[in-house]
Length: 340
Image (cartoon, rainbow, N blue to C red; front, side):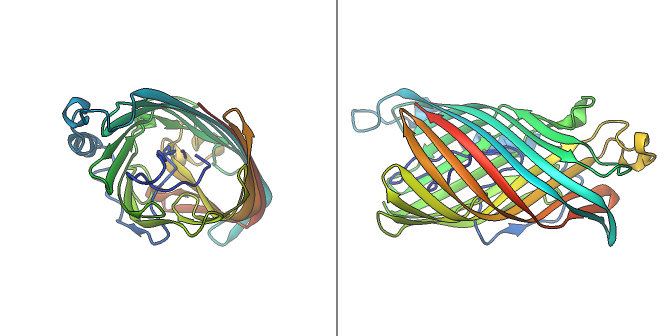
C-alpha cells in the first residue's frame, strides 16, 4: 500500500532523493519482475529477514563523512493525502458471477527524514491506508481492509555512484474487526542503485511480505531523463512516462499497481455461513492504466489528479484457494502533497 504517488528516480548520489512510499502494498521493483513461490514455513518468521536488513546498515557515526563536503544536517518533512474511487463492475468467484464490486481508497502518510550531514540518512513515517469495498450480499468478503504502520527507512550513499535504500514497515494489516497477533506484520523493501550519469540511474529492488500470496518479488529498474521535458521512469508501483511542459506542471501516463495483504477477523466467514474464511490472510490487488497531471501550487504544496481504466482487481485467499476477480472499471484518484 504505500507508499507515494510520485514517480522519481531511484536513490543515488547523482539523482534526487526519492524514498520508498510504501506500505504493505507498495513496491519499488520494475517492469520485469520475478517472484518466488509461497513459503509457508517462513510466513510467520520475519525476525531473520529484518535482522539481515538491519545488519546491512552500519551506524550513522561509522558512515558519516567528515568535513564540509557533504550536505548539512537537517530535517525534511513530507505529507501525502490521497483518495481514489472505482465504480461497480462484475465480480467472479471462479467462473461464477456473484454480483458487483466497487472500491474506495484512502491513504495518508507523513514522513520525516533526518539528514545526518554524511552518507546515511534516516526516515520515520506514520502511514494509514484503507480500501473500502461495496461487496455483493452473501459473499464472505470484508467491507474494508487497511493498515496503520510506522515505516522506518535508511538511505546510504555507498560511493559517488552506488546507493542503498531499505525500509521496514511494522504495523497492523487487518480488517480491524478484532486485533490479535496475526494482524501484525512488517513488510520489507530494499534496493540498490547505480548512477550511470545524472540523467540515467539503474536499480534493483526486492520487496518481502510474508503474508502476500507471492512473498518475495523484485527486479531491475531504470530512471532516464531523456531531456529536460521527457523522463522515462520504469519504477513500480507506478511505472510511467513523464512530460513537463512548464516548470510547475507535470503530465504523465502509465500503470499503477496497488494493494496489500491483510488478516481477517475470527468470525469473518462464520457470519456468512462460511467458517473457512475465519481468521485467514487475504491479498488484494489492483492494476490500473491511465494518465494524469501534477500541479506545483507553490509554498511546498502540489496537487495530482489521475484517471483511467482499472484492468484488474482481485481478492485472493491463497490458503483456501479462493479467488474473487473483478471485471475492468474506470477509476479516478486525487492526491494533495506538502513538502518542507
